[in-house]
Amino acid sequence: TIKALSDLATQLNGAVVMGHSQSGSFPLAAALLNPSATRALVLVEPGTCPATYSDAEIATLATLPVLIVFGDHRDTPTGIPSLPSWQDRYVACQALIGRLTRAGGAAEMFAPPDRGIRGNSHMLMQDRNSLDIADVILQWIARRVPRAASNN
Image 1 (cartoon, rainbow, N blue to C red):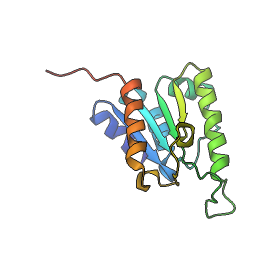
Image 2 (cartoon, one colour):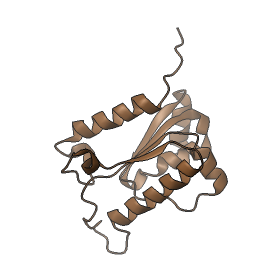
Image 3 (cartoon, rainbow, N blue to C red):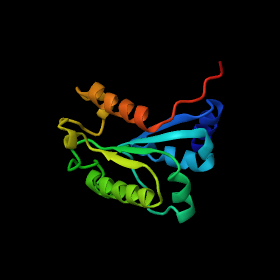
Image 4 (tube, rainbow, N blue to C red):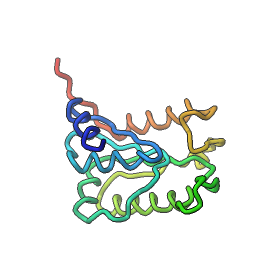
């Protein structure tokens, strides 16, 4: 799956790669396979933000803009008591952002309540304000991702 995601980004001559939940960290792994095929990474409520990346892998990921998005119900249980809570995952993603920015990267967290947007569950794309969330993500892409050269 991760290789296929990387291959697709390559076939598209560069892509903003987005993942959600269990596949939330797939963009990171795909970018490590071929960072030149990836233009930016968006992780929506990722199931994990790995703490095991080597310094070399962090340096590679730091060459790409990274946005991590979490809703405002991080205290809601994941449904499986043995798994980390959403708050634990949020903290792990903040740590990843810290590593990426210390390596010179442009990584940031978008937590809707920090912008006065409330009512988001784990399924941000299905919440009543999903268009507001999409607008923020698209604005971030417009600011952070250089436009591709035209073939005309």
